[in-house]
Image (cartoon, rainbow, N blue to C red; front, top):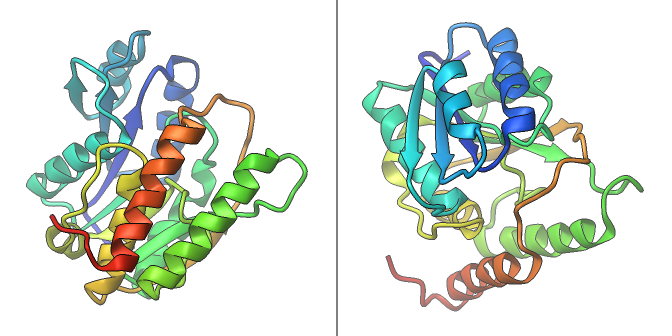
Length: 225
């Protein structure tokens, strides 16, 4: 496993699930530095992050997941990370898969925890949206991406130094994958299970539209930093 490893946990109003997520990460990745990013939460998430993570980044107002990840990546590099794992704070990612995701960096630059979205437990609109988004991302990037909306990812530090993705919300993760693939970095998928039930802050129309714009601009060759 690549070390030193930094785990980034972006959080927005996730007080009910946050402590367990961090506890499970520590159990499965002992020795990893955990950075919590509070994205302007209005519940007790900020105070909880201070108590359970090693470092915190705090936004006074909600800026979006992309902005939270970008800030986390910057701190991880300053801390000397050789690899970074991102995991959502809503409890939908099982930390038991973290060692397999990080371990797969031995054969790729980016690893995506890939969900099986075919089951009945997965909301239909999520299945359709992710299927379309993943297919479009593969077409635009040439990468082997089966779950473009998964926030459970590991990447080597050199990817973070090279890829300067844009967007402050969920479109950031799609833009990151495309830019990384076009820069020559490799991606592999590691199957994971997903625990549905916690609310998602993915806003169906606004955030889906932002992702579509990213894909269209890359496809048309008109995206500029």
